[in-house]
Every structure is written in C-alpha cells, then in structure tokens.
Image 1 (cartoon, rainbow, N blue to C red):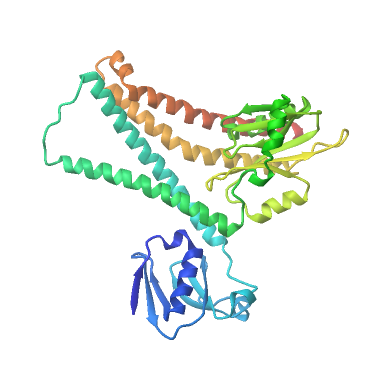
Image 2: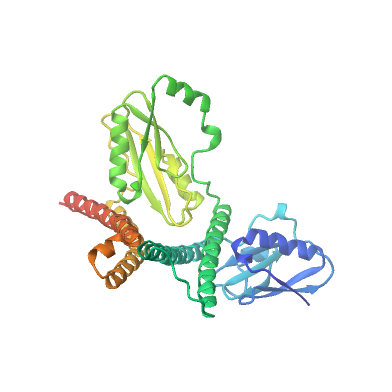
Amino acid sequence: MKKVYRTFWSYDVQKTETWLSDMAAKGLVFERLNRWTRCFYFQEREPAKRVYRIAYDKLSSSVLPKTLQDEGWKKAASAGNWEFTFNEQPESVIKTSPIRHGIIKHNRMITYIFYGTSFYVAGILMANISMLASSWRQDGGSNIVESPLWILTFIFFAILFGSMVLGIYSIAKITGTNKGLDGTTAGFWPVDEIDQQSEKELKKARRWVTKVKFSWMYSPDKMEHWLESMEQRGLNLHRVNKIGTIFHFTKGEPRRIAYRVDYQRGPTQSYFAIHREAGWNEEFTSFSNMEKWTIWSKAYDEGEERPQLYSDQSSRLKHAKRIAITYTVMFSPLVAFYIYFIIGNINRADTIQDWLSWSSSGLFIIAILIFGTFIVRIWAYYGRLRKRNTAWGN
C-alpha cells in the first residue's frame, strides 16, 4: 500500500483526475482517501488505463445511477460527500460522465469563507500597522523592551500573513477551477475583438469617448439608465475594460438600446446561452468567482416595448433583495470591525485632538464610509424596485 499526500487536491479536481489516471498507468490503483490528512492510498497492481471522475454530492448513494453504469462507470472510493469513479474505456468514446455542479457549489462556498477570512485578517493587519505608525509618530520613536514573549507576537503575525497568502492562493486556484468546470469565459471583452488600429483612428478623429464608473453594481438601475442615456445622446458603447470601471464609447447616431445589469452567484454556460438566444448581447462579465455581474444589451425599434431580461417583476424584486442581503452579509462585519477599533482608539486617547492625530482613525473612518455606502446604496436600489413594483401593481 502506497500513501501520497496532496494537500490542495480538491482545488483542481481535473488535475487530480489526470494524476489518478497517471498513477493507474504506473500500476498504482487508487483505493481510498483520508479527507482529514489529505492522504491518497494506492494498491500495487497491473498497470491499467483508467479515466477518473470526481464528484461532490451531499445525497450521494452507494450505487451509481444506471445511466452511468451502462456507460461503464464504476465506483473507486468515497470520502464524505466526495465520490471517485473510474471508467476503463477510452475517454474519446465516453459520452456520459458524473455531473460537476456539486463541486462548483462546494468550491464557491469555500471561496466565500476565504474571502471573509482574508478581509478579516487584512483588517487586523491594517489596524495593527496603523496603530503602530500612530504610536511611533505620537511618541517620536519607539522603545523596544526585550522579552522572550516577543516570539509569540512574531508567531501571531506570521500566522496572519500565512493566512492571507493561503486565502489569496485558494481564491485564485478555485476560481480558475470553477471556470474550467462550468465552461464560463474569463469575463471580459475578448482580445481578438479589440481592433487597436481602428480605435487609434477613432481617437484621432475625436470620435472616442472614455468614461469612468466606480462601484456601479451597487446601483444597477442607475447604471442601466446612464448607459441608455449615453446611447440616446449618440454615444454608442464600444467596450468595457477588464475590471468593469472604464467604459469606451464612439460618437455615432442615437440608438434605442435597452441595457440590463444582472447578478448571478454562479452562472453556468446555459445561463449565457439562453439570453444570447433571446437576442441579448453580453457587453461585460466580471471575472470574480464570488460575484458575477453581467451587462446585457438589446436593440429595439421605436414603438416597440422596452426589452426586459426578466418578464416577471416580482422575480426581479426577489433577486434584488438577495443581492442586498448578500452585500450586507459581506460588508457589515467589516463595518462593525472598524467601529470596534475606532471605539478602542477613543478610549486610549486623552483628548479628541490626540484621537484625530492618529492616522489609523482616519483610515477606519474612510473604510466605514466606503463599506457603509455600499450597503446603503444596494438597499436603496431594492427600495426603488419595490416602489416601482408597487406602482405597477396599482
């Protein structure tokens, strides 16, 4: 029995599947997995050609579905909700495979946890660095007292820094894996569709207009209205940059274009296919695994009703409420965290002037204003939709 440890095997299941197939070809056939130690156990046998598939299902059964059995799939092992299957047929002839949706949902949840942890750790690091800088400036230097307990401080900050690195690595790795599993694109305007020469000519002819829009996703309806008003003025949307903050327009004729900003936690390839078949054009899709924002556009003629991405207004209202709750859950702990440190600074300060002189206090106030504004804006968006929905109902 051979043991192999792979700590981050679940971050890239496709790579793990290939690795298991390579091990089988060497005569090491996968037998079982210890989830807690991340250890794979292999039995030495005759070399075999096997195609492995990994699935995650909270309601997994000890028996594979008949459709998979008919296709030649067999169960290799199970570990908790993880299920490992293999097929001895060539991969080119296999038509049906275990579904991946469970892995995508599981990965997304892990990503949320790492996002929250990273924000929390970043807040602690920023708070400590800010307080250290403030004390240094206020006292005119530092007086380091030797103590064996300093090792605990170094260990604490090493753990925080390691947690940040692990969080960033995990988010990046899992995001890439999910994109490969669900078949979605990287989320921005394809490079081959950007004609740099024609853009240079448009700029020389002064027909190129660039606008910057930050945090527009917290007021989606206002963003839709802004884009449509630009079209009516003859400024036609040409493309959006990768991170969705810079909008490039060309001067042309006024157009009737309906814009819709949509949020999905984990859109599949079918989500984009359905809207494209309905005549909608994808102008921008964010590349974040945690939040997927898409700007859709659709032309319509005079006299036609303005196209709607969702025909049921109550569904759109519920969708907006879900968005508001999501961002509230994301940002409220950060706001509470910074308020806690501000109160701590106030208690340590002798006078209000001392408190205001600390650079950390200003940083915390700015952070509270930024994240607090995000929460207020997204709930204001929900309130506007609810008011419109009530007016239409009457």
